[in-house]
Length: 129
Length: 180
Image 1 (spheres, rainbow over the protein chains, first blue to last red):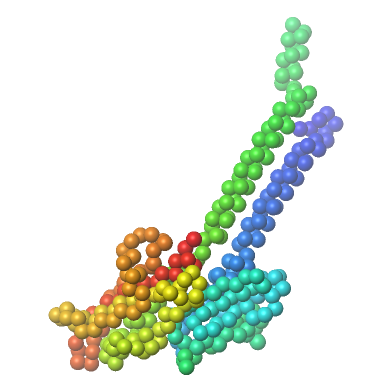
Image 2 (cartoon, each protein chain N blue to C red):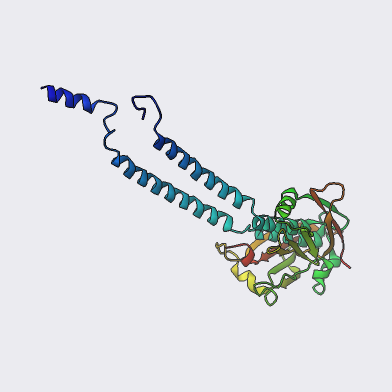
């Protein structure tokens, strides 16, 4: 590797740089899929549906959805990210996306962003009229 | 002799390969081919893993069982007012409507069957079944593409001290949104 003058050959440097570039691309790809909008939409839709199944009238539930809000900001989605209509939960973090999941608990749910904590969503459980 | 010594010294010289670098270039090609294969394998594994949806059907079926159990028995006492087949879903605050995707509007995605028996003599005093009855045929079969079934037995008493056994079977389908 070291020639008579004691300098490192250029080929080895290029080889190491190419390896590092390859690893960086692989890690970027992994992180892009781990925190992907589609995965978050499905995760929160099902999580909230299961929460509603277990909930009873009179409950007030606060759910931390910071990563979903950040993802919606990244996707330039400014509308409400979580909607509960009837017994259907819809989570939408981007314009061309969204995931819905139903729950079997017959309750009325009012979902809105927490005004005191912008990282949370509030769910008020009522009797279904 | 001189030529042999020279040759030997060349063999052990640190710069032995300096004149022939073609071998190194060939090895580099194989190296990057291996890297590409590894990258392809990692990408494939990531797509397989994150392409799988979260399967929450068993949790849902468990919650449905728990909800029905709470509807029939509270604090260990049987709620005889709810032992009515008509309007059982409304009495227990259950709604089996689902989103109208994958043809779910025509095929119900839930099913449950509840039986209340006298513990002493095993006589059935109440039973109710709601939802899609075809789903119970898939219970007992080990396949993730089949509906998720949960069966539970709880025991209850009434104010007279009579003991009852409540058997509940809950089934949740929703295969298209929980299994790839």
